[in-house]
Length: 307
Length: 228
Image (cartoon, rainbow over all chains, first blue to last red; front, top):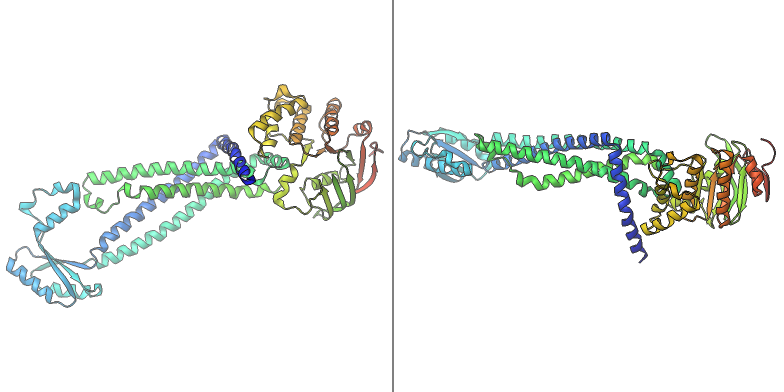
């Protein structure tokens, strides 16, 4: 019962805390703007790294699916009988799980599907199809790929053997690299932002050092004094993250649509559209933004509360 | 109400600010703390407010040994002790009303209680008409009255006044003293550190004189004493 009363009273002081927090914000508006800017800048870079990691991951995943297959393109001037023979010869190679014939017509259909709503651009190519016939070879074991590729190359009538192990290895390496470097940059930027917000709040606190002193004499608890600054910091962080979010959201959307509506359709097939990442982006920004603000304010107050 | 037992305070610099002080102050007393600068008055005030800790001895306020209470309980101790300073220490960005209301806000009083008590208190110190002014718009005497109103708004049993008339002219000083006496008559124990010889001599209250950290005189109805 007593506890309930205490809680009600705490909520009553909340109005005072929030009012004070906003007054502080306004009083130091130049430094507040600087802090908001620094959080926004941090989060914009963070958002860009985040989107980059997301896209590279998606690209890598797309590539992984081709990991266990080898595409064998056939020369254009060979007849159907020879195509059959080549298929039989490939089947004889050790370590092959399955082979599938992809006619030039199928290849075009697949590409149309891949291009989605932009597939119409490929219309008209049916009569003069530039794509070659090919076999898609699936392996039992990925390690065999180099040997199998060598053997396929010996069969006459085969042209280009698409084999992406090297690319994929590189991709995986790049993905890891980007992730690690991205994380390091993010951690450094967050630390810088905490420092800048901390300094802003420190200015407010220093300017109000006498007031804090008086409050302590009158019998205010540390948390009573701390809350307005805490709220100030959190709001600085949240303002900064909203700005960053809006900028990232609209510019990525614009870039994505720009790429999609122009000749970079192949690119957009691998790009992650905004709706897929908007939730995690927003959540991340809110958490990190308010976190930076709260941490900065708590940090900067320690010294002044010892009276 | 206030008991000091064998209290000594040695600062880190080695200065012996207070040595072996024994004082008992009863509820409702009005006590002057006199002595030259550096005699130990300020240290004594700081000890009562738990701004600093005694090196030795015990301090009991309102039956509570304050040398033993936890840091976190200090704000609650301070709410039992109103303080008035020489330099008033009002919050510059708050009006007279808000300054007094602030002392209630920190105790999580309801807005209703605040609206009822603050005007009454401002009436008591004679500042009802200046409620909406800021401290810098007031005279020194008026500012001190605001700070007195703030110090007693939560009805603390003890009021400590550290040189409350130090920055005021004689006439204003007397107004403040009349106000303090009035508060004392309502039952509040008052401890006032001061240099003001005339005031001490006129008031005829208990006087504790300190010199070099020791009590040299403790009289029930005393005067300031010799020249210093």
